[in-house]
Amino acid sequence: MKDTPINYELVKETIRKSGLPTIGDASIREIKKLIDQLEKATGERYVRMEMGVPGLPPTQIGVEAQKAALDKGVAAIYPDIFGIAPLKEGISKFVKNFMDISVSPEGCLPTVGSMQGSFAAFMTLNRMHADREGTLFLDPGFPVHKQQLRVMGQGWESFDVYNYRGDKLHDKLESYLKTGKICSILYSNPNNPSWICFTDKELQTIGELANKYNVIVIEDLAYFAMDFRKDYSKPGVPPYQPTVAKYTDNFVLLISSSKAFSYAGERIGMMVLSDKLFNTTAPDLLRYYKSSNVGYALIFGTLYSLSSGTNHSAQYALAAILKAVNEGKLDFVSIVKEYGEKAKIMKKLFTDNGFYIVYDKDEDQDIADGFYFTFAYPGMSGAELLEEMLYYGISAITLDITGSERHDGIRACVSLVNRNQFGDLEHRLKKFHEDHKK
Image 1 (tube, one colour):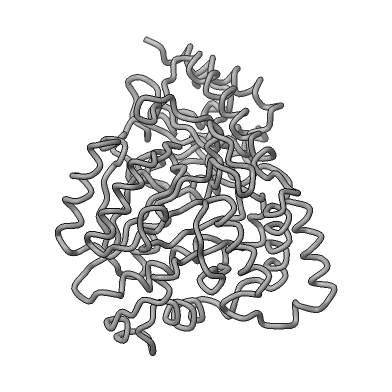
Image 2: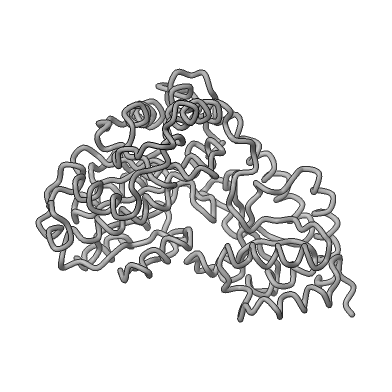
């Protein structure tokens, strides 16, 4: 039997019983289930880096506001599908204060997490043109977005944007858009999983091409203001969170409360449509909706079909959080900087023990320390590395499922790794390196 930090035979048998044909192709939730089983079978605590979930307490302002709303009886009342007024106004002020863009509250919508927002965006926007087919993903990205398109029967294209940074982006992006088949573009910024951050020049390229080809950009801001190389924490004061909305009116913003405000459990996100897009008329929508107006079709067609409104009390929670943030009474960025500080320490533990960072540059800058980082080990594919690391008590996901062209890599999320586990992590990485170095 091999001498590994976690009992080799127990890990091997648990993997066999899981029924997963290939660990490297497993989804995030499948890996989570497997690690739950491994911890139960072995009695050992894993260094868990597979799930991109907050590792900080929820924002207390939100908790108190939500409790107050429940005490007032909102649990018995269906919320309006388009959201409560204080939240809509708070979202509008938030994007003005932290992105320097002006959007009417009418186009600021609460969603059941950003995942409902992306699902609703795909379903509606990709039906605006009968002669187009779907979404272009600027990968790597969140695997479930493609799963959403798959269950809707919509098509997509994708490419690994890391290979086309800076001036290279224009021609590569245009090569897809000029086919006339793309309805929408989606990317995350900062990027999940690579943590690259688009420059203003790159966002300008995306925005200008979206204008040229009349394509809608869906900007996933799940990790809002979490490029800690710049201070985006002060309302109404530059620098602002970079956004494509500076360069096009063809945009939808998906803003999560899960990471920035550690409010993941209540499933409350924000979807922001530009005034122009909200009021756009697209006759081809009439194939599926009663109205050809994008905003109306989205709210009373798609969102209504998915849920009769977003969690009522959670809307009051988020409204209270945004009010405090907009007034400068809550510095949410300083709280989540813990992720960047942990990433810096953890990355060094990996690189000190023979590993290397896969996505390591933002053009000519070192990648920021944040919620995620990517790593690999010489001579191993990402799938091989992931499975082997399970015997060493470390979990993550492969880059293979993210649309990355780097098949050597793994995505690590720092959020659930407690600082008191750094010693275990270091010991396990040293043992891994001793067993595998050539």
